[in-house]
Image (tube, rainbow, N blue to C red; front, side, top):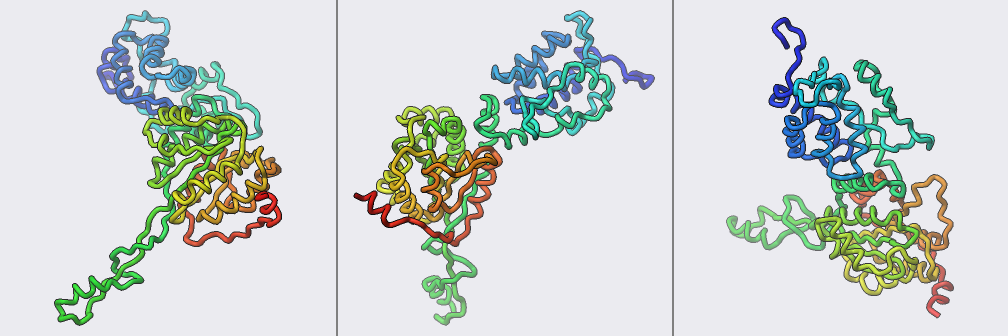
Length: 432
């Protein structure tokens, strides 16, 4: 402000050395992070320091931000659109010399905006409610908004990009959206319901009498039982067993589901992970690597039947005969992730599903196709398995994963009522 109270023109070096530019650039970095770009504080400071070198011409300023704030090639178009929405054209003097550092003119009240007044995230290949592509904001509309700062925001651009991503089917994700989904998965909180252990612990109020501690406590009263010590059953988290289908029909979901299993493995204390196509493979050890890319690389080297055929019954037979006694004890919850397409013997699948349900505390089948409103369980594999499933849930987007997390945390101490419909003639024929 000048002495007469009017808005003056700050020189470029004054802005670069002051708090005005830093404040706007920091908010711009937060805005990019909301869109999924991994912008750090160090990158923001590099951007501010680069201004003295490149000047304040709009294109140079934009390219400096792109060089310092964008680390992935696929994020370039998103950065360009976000820059045009955030930085008003009235901020720059386009016809001035590039080396003149007095080009940057702060618009009225631009530096006093709160975070709630920032432009909404730009459109990024989203679809409307009726399945029609939403209209992208044209350049003329952007210029009109810059000329009229009090204009009402476009309702198509007011919702959160992350919220829109959570409702999108995994099969429709772009590589950039898969990366953003991975970060959202890493932020999810996984809690598993607890079970009552046979061991007991000290408690002020408990169902069991602690005789030894009671005798020691009452020695000061000459052995008279004035104070009685109590014990209660110890609570422990349940074991979780993930069995995921990686056959050809599940290929479009496999990578994101493996990232989901990696997140669960690191979010819970007791997790066992298996994958199957034509045969079963245990990958618990491979997923223990902290880096998700390294973990998936180790999994791809270990699994030999990736994107091949599907034999669910034979894979479950291997699990029941080789692994069930090791991992199904102490109230384990089993999650099978598959679309139900099967080329194996249906009778084997039916028999092994019945056996697996008897050994598991709760058997949950997660089907990525169940998220479609037109889906019907018509394949012979899913029809053979459904009578032995306690919960049949979708797993097609991030919202379904959040619902699954809530379901696992709310599993009760009471086992679900089961009405298995295994037919004895089918079992006898399969054994022959």
